Length: 327
Image 1 (cartoon, helix red, strand yellow):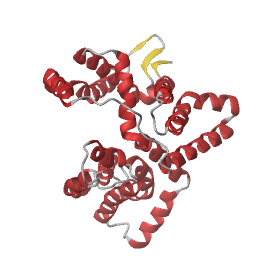
Image 2: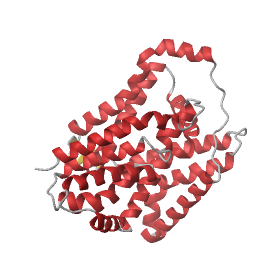
Image 3: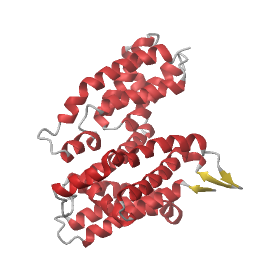
């Protein structure tokens, strides 16, 4: 038993999403009120009722229903049926006054999240009262992140003097600004799992064996890192590329054949995937959404600025992996 379990985290996410759905339905001026509410309602239902559906309906039927809901979610987004609601924008004078009052303190809640997540994962993972653990042993990092977000929310209330309901209300405005791209990481991570089940990694392994000498360690390292970046550019998320490229190249060639150390290999491999994230519009939540929020004339400007950094990091990752991961 754990106090902060993955089931309770999912329940919290589902409740917050349903709160946003309720406010969307109340917004009579919303241009696409019903379809936007349906989009987020289906998404929130997966968090709220996923485990119950498995218990009541059986795993096979529950998974089919979840798959159908995901297809409807994709169709709603693809058909442009998800849009932002109506809001009263703050005046420039109000924004400047708020900026002067908060100053650099506005970054404190945001910085608390990564710092406390790391600290809590390292220091609080074994905290318990009797048989009740503080964190879910199987999802310690996610539990620590949830606690860190709660702490950051409290810090934000103290800094701004606003109420907790104001924070939840602002979450709807932020989610509306991002739109369907807010759920893109979850969808792409799920797609990566589909590729694993489809044994796409085995196909990549066979393909690499045809064109590359398995004894050429540097070539294998370069192909793995570049492949992670390219596949991430196609998928939009390194989490989707990681299981496929690792199963196809890293595991059979670099780890089993050449004896690479798994921990640094996987870390640098993921980092190589993130280089691809910097260079693709498929990573809409990272590259397209910021351009929209900043009102940039060129929606690809963020990507263009990031490409030199991404290529430099990718080359550095190849060298790091080649010189670090092998005994």
